[in-house]
Length: 318
Ligand code: FAD
Image 1 (tube, rainbow, N blue to C red):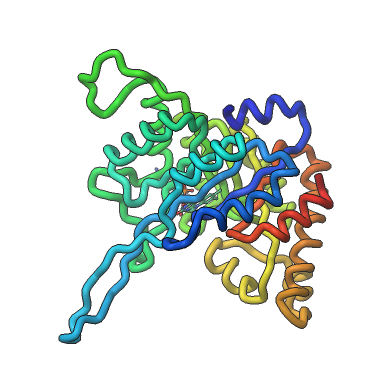
Image 2: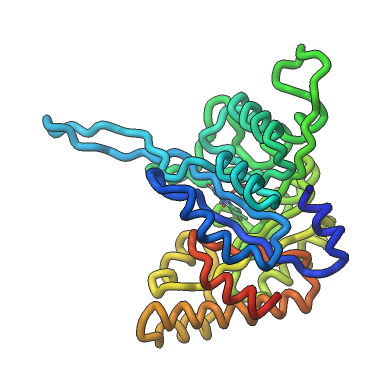
C-alpha cells in the first residue's frame, strides 16, 4: 500500500515507522531481522531501507603506487526490501539515488522494484562521494532529485526511456522526497531550498520525510514555510535519538543540523555512553510527544542499525 494511503487510513492518528541500513558487506541478513523484530509490536505501516552508493578506496601496491578501487560497503537494499515484505508483510521502501545511477540503471532498478510488488520509493540525489567536494552526477544520470522524480513519474505513466516501446505497463510508485527543516547543506537559503522542494512535488512526489532535527520549533517553522509556499503533501518528521558522545560532533557536521544547548550540556555531563543513550531517549520521547500532540501523520525514526533505544521510545510514546 502507498504511504499516502497508510496516512489516510490512519484517520489522523500518528503512526510509527523507521529506517534501517543494509548490513555491512559480509554480514548476515539476520542482523537486520534482529533490529526489526523488537519494533514490530508498534505496527509500522512501512519501513525504509537506505541505499549506499559506491566509495573509492586507494590500495598501496608493492611498488608504492596506489590503485583506486571501487567498493560498496552496504549493498543489498532491494534484497532486504523483498525480505522485509516477505517476512513481515509490511511495506518496505527502498531509497533510490541519482548518484552512481544512469537513467538506464534507474529504469532497470524501478522495473525490479515493480516486479517485487514494492509500492513506494524514496527519491534522493545522494551525497558527493567521499573523495569529491561536490556531487557529480553520472554522465547519463540525474543531477537533482527532482529529475529522478520526473523519471519515476514518467514510468508511472508507462513512458520508458525507449520511447518506441509499445503497450507498456505503467508502474504505480508512490514517491517520497527529502526535506530539510534546517535547510540542505548546499542550499544558499531556506527559500531556495523550499523552492526546489516544491519542484520535487510538482514533478510527482506525494510526501516528504525530513532530515533529523532536535528542536521541534525547526520542524514547525519549516512546515509553516512549506505550506506558505503551496506545498500541501504530508511532511513526516524524522527523529534520531542521540546515543554516543561522539555524535555531538558527528551529527552537526554530517547532517548540517544544530543541537540545542540543553541537549548538548546534558550529554557533556554524562559519565559514559550508557548515560548518553538515556539522555537521547528522554529527549526524543519529549520531541515525539509534542509532535504527536501537533497531529503529525507519522513519526519516522532513524535507527542506524540499533533498535533498542527506538523500542524504548516507542514503548513510551505509542
Ligand atoms: P535535491 O533535492 O536534489 O537537493 C540537493 C541540493 O540542490 C539542495 O541544496 C537543493 O536546494 C538544491 N537543488 C535542488 N534542485 C536544484 C536545481 N534544479 N538547481 C539548483 N539547485 C537545486 N543519502 C544516501 O546516500 N542514501 C540514502 O538512503 C539517503 N536517505 C535519506 C533519507 C532522508 C529522509 C534524507 C533527509 C536524506 C537522505 N539521504 C540519503 C541524504 C541525501 O542524499 C542528501 O542529503 C543529499 O545531499 C541531497 O539529497 P536530496 O534528495 O535532498 O537532493
